[in-house]
Image (tube, rainbow, N blue to C red; front, side):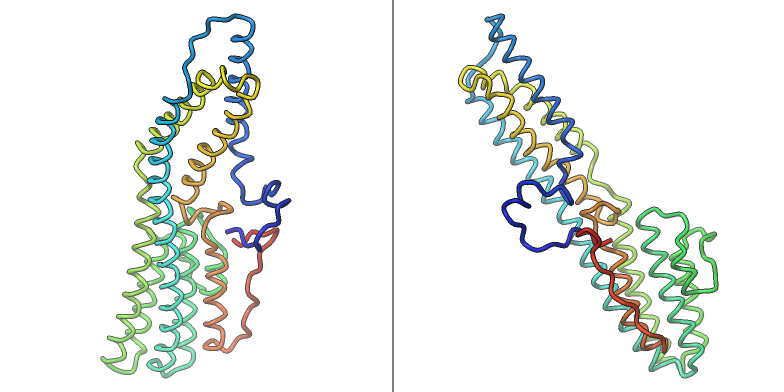
Length: 293
Protein backbone atom coordinates (compact mmCIF):
# COMPACT_ATOMS: atom_id res chain seq x y z
CA UNK A 1 0.00 0.00 0.00
CA UNK A 2 1.24 3.48 -0.86
CA UNK A 3 1.37 5.79 2.16
CA UNK A 4 2.17 9.43 1.45
CA UNK A 5 0.91 12.91 2.19
CA UNK A 6 -1.20 14.90 -0.23
CA UNK A 7 1.05 15.31 -3.30
CA UNK A 8 2.18 18.67 -4.58
CA UNK A 9 1.45 19.70 -8.17
CA UNK A 10 4.90 18.50 -9.27
CA UNK A 11 4.43 15.14 -7.52
CA UNK A 12 0.94 14.85 -8.94
CA UNK A 13 2.29 15.19 -12.47
CA UNK A 14 5.47 13.14 -12.20
CA UNK A 15 5.11 10.66 -9.29
CA UNK A 16 5.69 7.11 -10.52
CA UNK A 17 5.64 5.21 -7.20
CA UNK A 18 2.18 3.71 -6.89
CA UNK A 19 1.20 4.71 -10.40
CA UNK A 20 0.14 2.24 -13.07
CA UNK A 21 1.72 4.40 -15.79
CA UNK A 22 4.95 2.35 -16.13
CA UNK A 23 2.91 -0.78 -16.86
CA UNK A 24 0.51 0.79 -19.35
CA UNK A 25 3.03 3.08 -21.09
CA UNK A 26 3.85 0.54 -23.87
CA UNK A 27 0.15 0.26 -24.67
CA UNK A 28 -0.28 4.04 -24.70
CA UNK A 29 2.71 4.48 -27.00
CA UNK A 30 1.41 1.70 -29.24
CA UNK A 31 -2.06 3.19 -29.84
CA UNK A 32 -0.57 6.69 -30.14
CA UNK A 33 1.87 5.45 -32.78
CA UNK A 34 -0.97 3.87 -34.73
CA UNK A 35 -2.90 7.16 -34.45
CA UNK A 36 0.11 9.06 -35.81
CA UNK A 37 0.41 6.59 -38.68
CA UNK A 38 -3.28 7.06 -39.54
CA UNK A 39 -2.87 10.87 -39.53
CA UNK A 40 0.14 10.56 -41.87
CA UNK A 41 -1.80 8.27 -44.20
CA UNK A 42 -4.70 10.72 -44.22
CA UNK A 43 -2.35 13.59 -45.09
CA UNK A 44 -0.55 11.80 -47.92
CA UNK A 45 -3.25 9.42 -49.15
CA UNK A 46 -6.62 11.17 -48.82
CA UNK A 47 -9.67 8.94 -48.78
CA UNK A 48 -9.10 7.12 -45.50
CA UNK A 49 -12.54 6.21 -44.06
CA UNK A 50 -13.39 8.32 -41.03
CA UNK A 51 -16.31 9.86 -39.18
CA UNK A 52 -16.93 12.65 -36.68
CA UNK A 53 -16.43 12.33 -32.94
CA UNK A 54 -20.11 11.90 -32.02
CA UNK A 55 -20.26 8.06 -32.19
CA UNK A 56 -17.09 7.85 -30.10
CA UNK A 57 -18.63 10.10 -27.44
CA UNK A 58 -21.52 7.66 -27.01
CA UNK A 59 -19.20 4.66 -27.15
CA UNK A 60 -16.87 6.32 -24.62
CA UNK A 61 -19.67 6.94 -22.14
CA UNK A 62 -20.76 3.30 -22.33
CA UNK A 63 -17.18 2.10 -21.86
CA UNK A 64 -16.70 4.47 -18.91
CA UNK A 65 -19.81 3.14 -17.19
CA UNK A 66 -18.68 -0.46 -17.63
CA UNK A 67 -15.18 0.34 -16.36
CA UNK A 68 -16.71 2.14 -13.39
CA UNK A 69 -18.91 -0.85 -12.56
CA UNK A 70 -15.92 -3.20 -12.72
CA UNK A 71 -13.79 -0.83 -10.64
CA UNK A 72 -16.51 -0.69 -7.96
CA UNK A 73 -16.64 -4.49 -7.85
CA UNK A 74 -12.84 -4.64 -7.44
CA UNK A 75 -12.83 -1.99 -4.72
CA UNK A 76 -15.51 -3.88 -2.81
CA UNK A 77 -13.19 -6.91 -2.76
CA UNK A 78 -10.29 -4.75 -1.57
CA UNK A 79 -12.35 -3.12 1.16
CA UNK A 80 -13.86 -6.41 2.34
CA UNK A 81 -10.35 -7.83 2.62
CA UNK A 82 -9.35 -4.84 4.76
CA UNK A 83 -12.40 -5.30 6.99
CA UNK A 84 -11.66 -9.00 7.46
CA UNK A 85 -8.08 -8.25 8.48
CA UNK A 86 -9.32 -5.55 10.84
CA UNK A 87 -11.53 -8.19 12.43
CA UNK A 88 -8.53 -10.51 12.68
CA UNK A 89 -6.62 -7.82 14.58
CA UNK A 90 -9.51 -7.39 17.03
CA UNK A 91 -10.02 -11.16 17.49
CA UNK A 92 -6.32 -11.82 18.05
CA UNK A 93 -6.19 -9.15 20.74
CA UNK A 94 -9.30 -10.59 22.39
CA UNK A 95 -7.89 -14.11 22.15
CA UNK A 96 -4.75 -12.97 23.99
CA UNK A 97 -6.86 -11.51 26.80
CA UNK A 98 -9.07 -14.62 26.98
CA UNK A 99 -6.05 -16.93 27.15
CA UNK A 100 -4.58 -14.73 29.88
CA UNK A 101 -7.81 -15.12 31.89
CA UNK A 102 -8.66 -18.75 31.25
CA UNK A 103 -5.29 -20.54 30.96
CA UNK A 104 -3.63 -20.49 34.39
CA UNK A 105 -0.15 -21.78 33.59
CA UNK A 106 2.20 -19.24 32.02
CA UNK A 107 4.03 -21.72 29.79
CA UNK A 108 0.75 -22.96 28.36
CA UNK A 109 -0.41 -19.39 27.71
CA UNK A 110 2.78 -18.53 25.89
CA UNK A 111 2.67 -21.67 23.76
CA UNK A 112 -0.94 -21.02 22.75
CA UNK A 113 -0.25 -17.39 21.85
CA UNK A 114 2.80 -18.33 19.82
CA UNK A 115 0.75 -20.91 17.94
CA UNK A 116 -1.86 -18.21 17.25
CA UNK A 117 0.85 -15.94 15.84
CA UNK A 118 2.15 -18.81 13.70
CA UNK A 119 -1.38 -19.24 12.35
CA UNK A 120 -1.54 -15.55 11.48
CA UNK A 121 1.70 -15.60 9.48
CA UNK A 122 0.76 -18.86 7.79
CA UNK A 123 -2.58 -17.31 6.84
CA UNK A 124 -0.78 -14.27 5.36
CA UNK A 125 1.60 -16.51 3.42
CA UNK A 126 -1.27 -18.66 2.16
CA UNK A 127 -3.16 -15.62 0.85
CA UNK A 128 -0.05 -14.40 -0.97
CA UNK A 129 0.78 -17.80 -2.40
CA UNK A 130 4.08 -18.12 -0.51
CA UNK A 131 5.20 -21.73 -0.21
CA UNK A 132 7.14 -21.39 3.03
CA UNK A 133 7.29 -18.33 5.24
CA UNK A 134 10.06 -18.16 7.90
CA UNK A 135 8.04 -15.83 10.14
CA UNK A 136 5.80 -18.71 11.27
CA UNK A 137 8.82 -20.69 12.49
CA UNK A 138 9.95 -17.69 14.52
CA UNK A 139 6.80 -18.05 16.63
CA UNK A 140 6.28 -21.80 16.84
CA UNK A 141 8.67 -24.73 17.03
CA UNK A 142 6.22 -26.81 15.00
CA UNK A 143 6.70 -26.67 11.24
CA UNK A 144 3.24 -26.61 9.68
CA UNK A 145 4.47 -26.04 6.12
CA UNK A 146 4.10 -29.71 5.17
CA UNK A 147 0.45 -29.88 6.23
CA UNK A 148 -2.28 -29.99 3.61
CA UNK A 149 -3.44 -26.55 4.76
CA UNK A 150 -0.83 -24.95 7.08
CA UNK A 151 -3.05 -22.22 8.61
CA UNK A 152 -5.76 -24.74 9.50
CA UNK A 153 -3.15 -27.10 10.95
CA UNK A 154 -1.92 -24.34 13.27
CA UNK A 155 -5.49 -23.43 14.25
CA UNK A 156 -6.26 -27.10 14.97
CA UNK A 157 -3.16 -27.28 17.14
CA UNK A 158 -4.23 -24.14 18.98
CA UNK A 159 -7.67 -25.66 19.61
CA UNK A 160 -6.11 -28.79 21.09
CA UNK A 161 -3.84 -26.75 23.34
CA UNK A 162 -6.56 -24.58 24.85
CA UNK A 163 -8.95 -27.52 25.24
CA UNK A 164 -6.30 -29.29 27.35
CA UNK A 165 -5.15 -26.32 29.42
CA UNK A 166 -8.26 -24.17 29.96
CA UNK A 167 -9.63 -24.07 33.51
CA UNK A 168 -13.14 -25.40 32.91
CA UNK A 169 -15.91 -25.92 30.38
CA UNK A 170 -16.90 -22.25 30.36
CA UNK A 171 -13.31 -21.23 29.55
CA UNK A 172 -13.06 -23.81 26.78
CA UNK A 173 -16.33 -22.58 25.29
CA UNK A 174 -15.18 -18.93 25.35
CA UNK A 175 -11.85 -19.77 23.76
CA UNK A 176 -13.53 -22.00 21.18
CA UNK A 177 -15.81 -19.15 20.12
CA UNK A 178 -12.81 -16.84 19.76
CA UNK A 179 -10.98 -19.37 17.60
CA UNK A 180 -14.14 -19.82 15.52
CA UNK A 181 -14.13 -16.06 14.87
CA UNK A 182 -10.55 -16.32 13.60
CA UNK A 183 -11.57 -19.17 11.31
CA UNK A 184 -14.51 -17.14 10.00
CA UNK A 185 -12.27 -14.23 8.99
CA UNK A 186 -9.77 -16.71 7.51
CA UNK A 187 -12.49 -18.29 5.36
CA UNK A 188 -13.65 -14.86 4.18
CA UNK A 189 -10.14 -13.92 3.07
CA UNK A 190 -9.67 -17.24 1.29
CA UNK A 191 -12.99 -16.78 -0.51
CA UNK A 192 -11.73 -13.49 -1.93
CA UNK A 193 -8.31 -14.90 -2.79
CA UNK A 194 -9.66 -17.96 -4.59
CA UNK A 195 -12.61 -16.35 -6.38
CA UNK A 196 -11.33 -13.81 -8.93
CA UNK A 197 -13.52 -11.42 -10.82
CA UNK A 198 -15.14 -13.28 -13.72
CA UNK A 199 -12.68 -13.59 -16.59
CA UNK A 200 -15.29 -12.43 -19.06
CA UNK A 201 -15.17 -8.99 -17.39
CA UNK A 202 -11.44 -8.64 -18.05
CA UNK A 203 -11.76 -9.98 -21.57
CA UNK A 204 -14.59 -7.62 -22.48
CA UNK A 205 -12.98 -4.56 -20.85
CA UNK A 206 -9.56 -4.91 -22.46
CA UNK A 207 -10.91 -5.97 -25.85
CA UNK A 208 -13.36 -3.04 -25.94
CA UNK A 209 -10.76 -0.56 -24.68
CA UNK A 210 -8.28 -1.54 -27.38
CA UNK A 211 -11.00 -1.37 -30.01
CA UNK A 212 -12.06 2.10 -28.86
CA UNK A 213 -8.52 3.52 -28.71
CA UNK A 214 -7.61 2.07 -32.12
CA UNK A 215 -10.73 3.44 -33.80
CA UNK A 216 -10.72 6.84 -32.06
CA UNK A 217 -8.25 8.46 -34.56
CA UNK A 218 -10.86 7.99 -37.30
CA UNK A 219 -13.14 10.37 -35.43
CA UNK A 220 -10.48 12.95 -34.54
CA UNK A 221 -8.28 13.18 -37.61
CA UNK A 222 -10.41 15.82 -39.35
CA UNK A 223 -10.75 18.18 -36.40
CA UNK A 224 -7.56 17.49 -34.42
CA UNK A 225 -5.01 16.80 -37.15
CA UNK A 226 -1.58 16.08 -35.73
CA UNK A 227 -2.93 16.55 -32.21
CA UNK A 228 -4.83 13.28 -32.69
CA UNK A 229 -2.02 11.07 -31.23
CA UNK A 230 -1.92 13.28 -28.13
CA UNK A 231 -5.67 13.04 -27.53
CA UNK A 232 -5.58 9.30 -28.14
CA UNK A 233 -2.75 8.99 -25.58
CA UNK A 234 -4.80 10.85 -22.97
CA UNK A 235 -7.86 8.68 -23.57
CA UNK A 236 -5.73 5.53 -23.53
CA UNK A 237 -4.13 6.60 -20.24
CA UNK A 238 -7.56 7.00 -18.63
CA UNK A 239 -9.08 3.76 -19.89
CA UNK A 240 -6.01 1.52 -19.70
CA UNK A 241 -5.09 3.03 -16.32
CA UNK A 242 -8.51 2.42 -14.83
CA UNK A 243 -8.52 -1.14 -16.14
CA UNK A 244 -5.07 -1.78 -14.64
CA UNK A 245 -6.04 -0.29 -11.27
CA UNK A 246 -9.05 -2.59 -11.24
CA UNK A 247 -6.77 -5.59 -11.80
CA UNK A 248 -4.69 -4.63 -8.76
CA UNK A 249 -7.62 -3.88 -6.46
CA UNK A 250 -9.32 -7.16 -7.37
CA UNK A 251 -6.36 -9.02 -5.78
CA UNK A 252 -6.16 -7.23 -2.39
CA UNK A 253 -3.73 -9.69 -0.78
CA UNK A 254 -1.07 -9.47 -3.48
CA UNK A 255 2.33 -7.86 -3.02
CA UNK A 256 1.59 -5.03 -5.47
CA UNK A 257 2.04 -1.43 -4.37
CA UNK A 258 -1.73 -1.07 -4.03
CA UNK A 259 -2.27 -4.34 -2.15
CA UNK A 260 -3.18 -4.51 1.52
CA UNK A 261 -0.25 -4.13 3.97
CA UNK A 262 -0.51 -7.60 5.50
CA UNK A 263 3.02 -7.49 6.96
CA UNK A 264 2.24 -4.23 8.75
CA UNK A 265 -1.03 -5.60 10.14
CA UNK A 266 0.75 -8.72 11.38
CA UNK A 267 3.27 -6.45 13.10
CA UNK A 268 0.40 -4.51 14.72
CA UNK A 269 -0.85 -7.78 16.22
CA UNK A 270 2.67 -8.72 17.35
CA UNK A 271 2.89 -5.42 19.22
CA UNK A 272 -0.45 -6.15 20.95
CA UNK A 273 0.52 -9.74 21.83
CA UNK A 274 4.01 -8.93 23.14
CA UNK A 275 2.94 -7.90 26.70
CA UNK A 276 1.09 -11.21 27.12
CA UNK A 277 4.28 -13.04 26.16
CA UNK A 278 6.48 -10.94 28.46
CA UNK A 279 8.69 -9.84 25.56
CA UNK A 280 9.55 -6.37 24.25
CA UNK A 281 7.11 -5.09 21.64
CA UNK A 282 8.66 -4.75 18.17
CA UNK A 283 8.62 -1.43 16.36
CA UNK A 284 5.79 -0.77 13.90
CA UNK A 285 6.66 -1.23 10.24
CA UNK A 286 7.26 2.01 8.38
CA UNK A 287 6.76 2.73 4.69
CA UNK A 288 9.87 2.31 2.54
CA UNK A 289 9.86 4.70 -0.41
CA UNK A 290 6.18 5.32 0.39
CA UNK A 291 5.42 1.56 0.23
CA UNK A 292 4.03 -0.26 3.26
CA UNK A 293 4.04 -4.02 2.71
